[in-house]
Image (cartoon, rainbow, N blue to C red; front, side, top):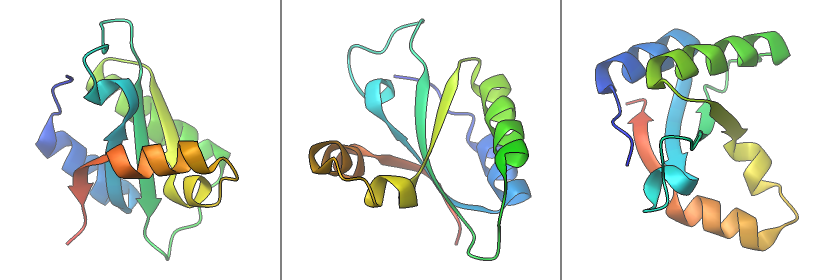
Length: 101
């Protein structure tokens, strides 16, 4: 399993107004390896409207912080997914690593 630099993740989430950030996928399983990327589920503050440029910057900052490729996935996007098996698996298995209080 991946080591999460908690203070740095918290600072990044506050900077970008991310209310919730969760791990899912191989980072939580035994098949996680040095070649694996990190899948992250996120929810922004309701006041935030970011475009592709901002999402790319967030992704690059997370990749630098974690030392791995990162796939950022919107929780809203997963909740709206027509693939109910994938949706349920991701939402059920996701482990929160940051939550705004």
